Length: 406
Length: 65
Ligand code: HEM
Ligand code: SF4
Image (cartoon, rainbow over all chains, first blue to last red; front, side):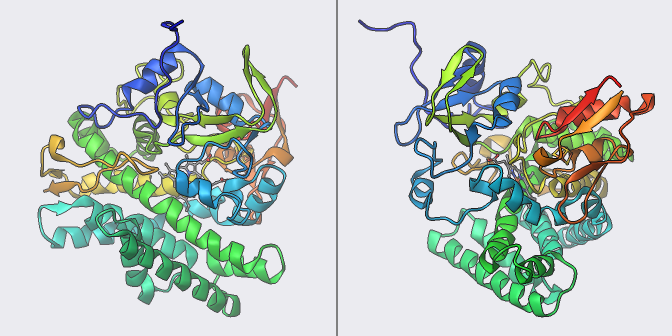
């Protein structure tokens, strides 16, 4: 008998509607409206659960039976590469559960303590102003991504880690290369290895001559046995990788979204209210929800959830954009509204693995959104939006090049 | 109203400190949150409710005293 009632299991990640490049896929909405829990098909044919509603994600991402351990059979890997390396990678905050996760994460939290991050505001303001000066002195039109957006997080993380000023250029050039989709895999790989080696060496230097920045602080923890040398240098690289493209994308796509909403951009440009600017950053994080491959987990035990049985060993994918466009949580979710209260968005995930660098990312975005448009009030797109190339395959969505003029 | 913090669950996101800096603070060494006061004054209620809503670890509870 042919089952005409059950809709076909859709492939995941979903395809966006190319006419609405800033909106989530229409499939995400259909699936969310149809049922709280449903199935999707991944690259390897497996059919894990998909969780799309805001409230369900909050409940399940804080459930102790929901695991981030990628060695567990049934884990819904993002791609073949991730499946291959699972079990071969060292235990880190990104692949462990409590209590191990709690212990590991407590060794790396110190630099991200809110008050310490807030103290970086003047330094970040200086970096952002300096980059805007350089961009204004350079060619017009320019690619906002390479001329500005990628450089902000790279210089900020250099500062945070304690990369000496003379090495900033090496650090920035290589970290941009490592992420440059236009380069060959070999070139990008070479840049990323060069960075790893560089950070390893720098960690040794800082263990002998501490300077109070994050690498020397992790060096101290290595010396007193709290973490291994490998853990510390891996963490340095992880901070760079996890925080670079994500933050850069929020700068470029955020600017694109604002240019599509000129009245709201004008209001932001004229505002001197730090609360409004911070709120605008939250709303852009919600609206754009750039992590597009879903948060991946596996059930470590049977979970009875609102009448549905999630069996032990079944994969779970949390579709963040669907939850951030769930009208139960955010009325009229498809409207960008810099005044709405968006603070409960899940663009940084939810639960114990919620983004380690979120306070830093927020601060960078607040400084950028509060400065860029004020300093360049005539900023505009230098190509029609239909001609922009978007990245539909990476972990984070993004635009490959954002031509702007002023 | 009274606020309760389940410290072992805290993942040191600092969200509570951002929402209600008069009620929460973080250890410098591991980022774990601690309470500056258990009693929540009337004018702090909204910010503590926000902290409850955004705590990623569901580690904060607001109780009738
Ligand atoms: C706007 C920028 C950013 C976005 C949208 C973002 C998004 C995310 C998301 C969704 C997760 C959760 C993954 C999961 O639950 O499996 C995450 C985790 C993480 N993020 Fe970010 N992130 C951003 C910036 C940063 C920055 C600046 C850093 C570091 C300097 C960073 C470091 C990390 C780390 C280390 C984790 C893993 C935490 C854990 O598993 O315990 N991120 N991020
Ligand atoms: S918001 Fe929750 S997890 Fe974050 S520091 Fe406060 S209590 Fe800890």
